[in-house]
Amino acid sequence: MRILYLFFAFFLLSVSGFADPASFSDSLPKVHIKVGIYANPPKIFIDQNGKAAGFFVDLLNEIARLENWQIEYVNQPWPLLLQNLKDGKIDLLPDVGHTESRANTYDLNKITVVSDWFQIFSNPKIEIKSLLDLDGYRIAILAGSIQLDYLNNLVKNLDQKLTIVEKDDYETIFNTVAGGEADILVSNRFAGKILGPRYGVKETSLIFNPTSLHFACTKGKKRFILERIDKHLEIWKKDPDSFYYRSLSANLDGVAQSKFIPVWLKNLIVSMLAVIGFSFVTIALFRSQLNKRTSELQQSNVRLEKALNDLQKAYEKAVTQERLNQLGQMVSGISHDFNNILMPINGLTDLMLSDEAILDDKKTVKYYLNTILAASHDGGELVKSMKEFYRINEKKLEKDPVDLNELIQNVITLTSPKWKEQPKKAGISIDIDFNPGKISSIDASRFQIREMIVNLLFNAVDAMPEGGKITIKTSESNDLVNLSIEDTGIGMSPETLTNCFRPFYTTKGEKGTGMGLSMVKEICESHQTRLKINSEPHKGTKFSFAFPKTQ
Image 1 (cartoon, rainbow, N blue to C red):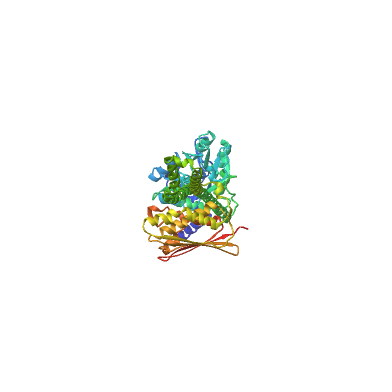
Image 2: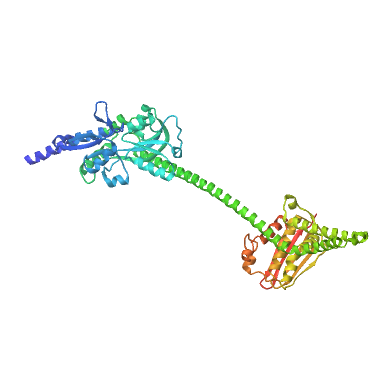
């Protein structure tokens, strides 16, 4: 009977609340716990009386009362607190943001104490609208904080230049911007609401990196402290009138979410902030990459323009060299023509000077002088033709009605040293068969068309090292004036035929510039002239042109 009575009495006591930790805390053994603390109001700080205060401190003091713990608060800079917790010199550290790295370094309680995120604050004179606007500024931030790691990665990804000023607590961080040592700062949302107005620092719309805050212990030591904290948080968070929500309202009123906001809504808000933050960073990274790519493209354009200018200069130089080559080949035979011109001039002059009796015969002297004058005119015409060939000016490039047959005949005469005299001295024979048809004039630059025909004749001669025949024909059909130049030379291979119009391509080695046929193609394009080429190895080459006739 006595046993039943005692059991019944124990049951009544249990129902009345004896099982609540608070009902038997006095019977628990005292546990001494060293807790790190620093200036991060309103979550945790030292009040005017030199005592630990804030939301985390209120929760911990109440849990300590229920658990019969003896708390010793140690006020130190945040980086030192992290190191001392890692080394086991303190037992517990509140207000620790969750990261994978910290979860591997410390033991964290499982239930989130409160959610947080970070925000950019600035000197009132500075306008910050996006993360890209941070470039070039001095930014104050908590040493050893997760936002420091986040910012370092962000700056690296955005390729920005920031001067980072690390401080040990948030009071000092805000004072740094207020005193002009830094331009902007990163703060958690709670400290920002309290310290921003106090120090005259302006909050911006830039928020990022939502996180959950926890209590942390030295890895592998005193895990029971975190388990008891989680037990109380689990009970408190289910009751809207619990000590947790009363402390939340008292310490973080106007900053934290109301205790009446449903849990699902809190999670939704945090998720939305995370998505917004991720999107904002993604956009900022995209803009940064776009700016970087734009800068690279601009630099590439500068290099490309320089390369094009260099190529244009090389092209112009090669064209000039090609013209000089043609001129040189003609000049080498001009001496023969000049000797023929000078022969009657020199001979008749010597004859008159050596025989004074001739001077008395006016009829003979007049005949000699007319012969000399005719020879000098021939020399002048020869010089004039040479000058017209190599001297270029804008007027030469203007298009006028041109008699193509007359122009071809002029070129044949002008280039005779190349296709007739020089091969003859080498013991070979090259003939030109010109069949002029009845054609209309063409609108063309006389200089350019002459240059084109000279080039083709020279190529034909070079393609017939053992001699041969060049056939030139003109005709007219519909609105076109046709020209064909055909040789019986060595012809072109398929590869040469494919590349022959490409600038600087040559099969003549050091003797060629590779610009001849490129110039021919360019002249045809500027005259809206159709160009066709047929060539086979050992069967010769034929160029066909169709010029629009003068309207």
